[in-house]
Image (tube, rainbow, N blue to C red; front, side):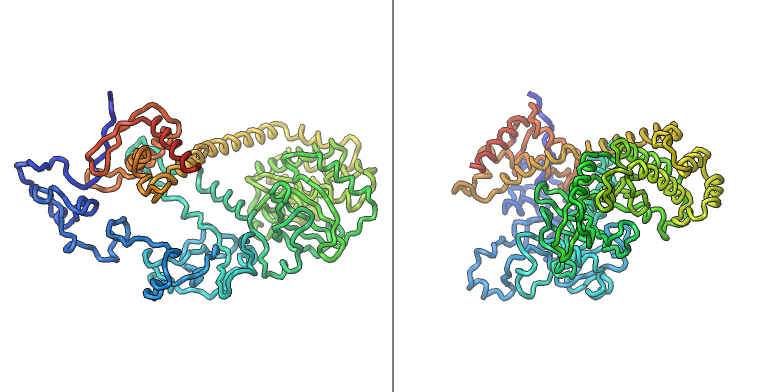
Length: 620
C-alpha cells in the first residue's frame, strides 16, 4: 500500500534526537531562547534532559503581553473566554472594567475618523475620501486617535450622501434604537483591502498566483459597487423620507436616484426618479414619477401593453404604469428596470468635465449600431422611441447603450397611435442630431450644422458623414432604419465580434468563482463539526470517533509547518485538498496526530463519509 509523505514536523523538535542519542548536539544560539513546543502544548518535554535544544523554563522566557508573539499566536496560557451571558452580577461588580450593553447590530465607533493622507483611488464615490475604520490597540491604533493617525476632521464635514443612504435593518427600525446610541454614517466599502498584493503563493516559475483563483479586483469592485447601490435606501431622518410613502403599490425601500426636474421641456411635467424594491419578486426597479398629471383617457393606459412586449438588450424595459395620490398630488408612475450606477450619454460624453476628450470613432460606431438595433425592434413593433436625447440614453456597462423612458410619450400625449409613422421619421432625425453632438463633443453642435459637418469631415471617416447626412435628410416613406445597417457594413460584424469577446471574458472570469460556492459549503460543514464544545451531552464529541479524523484532516490541510516550525502557507494545497474531499476520491493520505505518536491512513472518500455522517447527526 502506497502512502504519501507525512506532513512536516509540527512540534518544533528535531526528529533525529532520541532518548538514546549518544552524540550531543550543540544548541543553536537562536534556539536556546525559544520555548519548547512540547512544554507549551503538553506542559512537559520528555527530551528535556536528553538533548532537546529549546528552552523549558517558562518563567524566564515568557514574552511581555504586548510582544508580537503573544498577539500573533494562540497560546495555552491565554485566559479562558467567558461569555457575558454567564457572568453573575457579583462578578461584574468585582470587575469594574466589565460593562454590559444592549446588543446593537449597528457599528457605532467611539469616534468617526478619516485618514487625510490615504490613497483615495479606491472605494469611494465623488470626492469623499476612503474611510479607514478606527483600529484597536492590538492593531497599533487606539480609538482616541493614538498612533500615527493624522488629524481627525469633525463629523459635520462628512459628505451628506452617505448620511442619506444608510443601510436600514428592517428588524430594528432607527426610531427604536436605545437612547444615546451613536449611529455611524454609511461608509464606502474598502475594496482595495479585499485581496492581497499580486504575489505568487509560493516561489517558482510555473506556479499560479493567488489572484488566479478569483475574478479580477476591478471587475469584483464594479459588481460590489452595483450591489451596494441596490441596497441604499433613504435615511429615516432625512427630509425626503418624511414626505415619502412607506409603500407605493407593491414597491418599498425607496432611494432618490435623480432629484425632481423642475423644467418641463422634455415631457411637459416635472419628473423625478427613485429606486425601489418590489415585494412581488424582490428585484430593484426604477420608478419615474410624473408630477401633477391627471389621466384624461383610460385608453391611454393600454398603450403600455405594447411596450411591455418589447424585450431588447438595448432598451430599458417598461414594466407597468399606474396613477397614485401617495405624494399628496396626482402623479403618474412609470416602472422600468433598474441599472445601478448607470450614467447618461450626456453626462459621460457631453458634460463640461468630458469636453476636450474626443470620442474614438470605434466607440461612436458602437453607439450607432446599438441604437440602430434598438430602433429596429421599436419600429418593427409599430412604435416610436421619441426620446432620442443624450439625457435619456443610458450607459449601463462597458459602452453598453440602452434607450430609456420609452413609452412615456405614448401615454402622456395619447393619440391612439395614428401618427406613429411621423414619429418614426422624427426618431431618425433626432438620431442624426445625436450623432452630430457626439462626434463634435458638444450639445450645441447641431445649432451650427455646416461647421459641425465640416469638422466631422476633417476628423472622421466618410462613412460616418454619409450616415449623418442620410439621417438629417428630409423625411421620406423610403427612409428607414434598415438603410443605416447597410451603410455601417462590416462595422456591424466588428461590433458583434467585440461583444462575443467580452462575453467570453466574463464567462472565463465567472469560471474562476464557479467552485468557490461549493468549497464554502464544505468549509461551513467542517466549521460546525471541528472544535465543537459539546453535543448530545458529550463534551468530547468532536474529539472522538469519525470527528477525530476530521480534526486531523484540518491540521493536514491548514496547519502544515516547515522544518523550522514556521507555518507553511500554500493556497493551491488547501484548494486541492478541499476539492478532493468534496468529490470524495479514492486517493489516500496519511494523517498524523499532533503528538506524532499515531498515524492514520485514510482516503478522501472515507473522510467525506465522516463529514456527511457528523453533519447529519448535528441536524437531527
